[in-house]
Image (cartoon, rainbow, N blue to C red; front, side, top):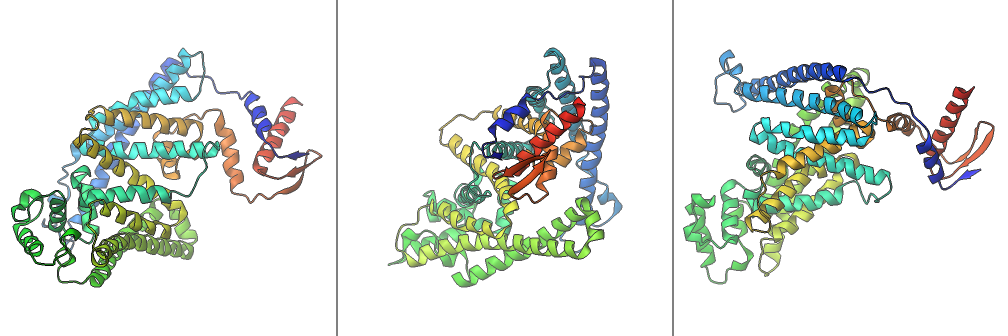
Length: 492
């Protein structure tokens, strides 16, 4: 028999009764929640302190640009002790409340265990993040929804409700263009630390960006100063250019002011070299510590393969980060030098589209991760623009609500179908919830993940003395045959 339409197989699997372990008693849930709170609170505190010590140690080493002297007093002068305590309370309270409430909901619903319990428990525990400092809450508000969107999209693709157009490249191109528009024209809509990070890796300095922003906002050149993010000297230089006869004043700030002392070609080389050098050091160190922390066994057993993978991935990522600002700057310069059209501020958004094309240098597996990294920052920029223009009111409770709902989605995916989450998220949540019970779909997902590691081909297979011709999805047919075999064994 030939299985072309496998919907009937899915219906049979849903009808199968899967026995679940009984829900623990309330007293057991209470003791488990207390122990989980203590465990994760200690883990969160020690982890934050250890991370602070690690970065302080390297920042205090001689030759790294630190103004502090290297001594034990500075090394252990930790200003994040209070923050570490808050992280511990947050991790402990969130995990304890989630586990206790999830079990309590099962008792209230006559022992029913499904996605509803996980979603409600995690969503109600989300407001615990208010105990964290404001800058950390902002980071979680960006990171949580990004992971929730990623899990939701993976679920829609796995159920074939939507078709995956690409690996996240288009999403990254659109979001990065909004970020680059905010980088030049609306820096107040981006987080200050993130904006400074882009400036450090980008081709223009702080004062030049302030000059460009003030010009497109209609500020007179002679009135520009520190309150506009630039200097009076740059304002006078721009005024001299604008009053020069036959000057292309509609092209915006000219190239000789944006990158003084270098031609456009020299500026491209400078931008690429600066970005490549910084990205090579950044990704090289991050990749090395990642391999040591998560793939130490593979480093010992296969050092050459690990070194080759680390080197190639680092170079590809460095090329991506170097080409992005280079293409961005090139588009702007070519537009100014080869056209006589007015330079609207949205040209910087269009240049971001071209710069985002460098994402295709990265591996397909990393493109979606980079898109998820850029998406919340682009959404934050659009939201802040809307608030400043009065399109919608500022809602102080929106960050808390969005984070709580996002954690509900993430914990539901962790309970029901962990393959929807990235491996890093699976490992982190698995450590925080060591005794976390999985819901009915977990055994099927475990077998599915194991079979995905094998190469499945279409053809004829003999299963239980039946000749089965597999055409579209062999893993579904094999799974159905295995389920039937287990039923036969349990019957006899």
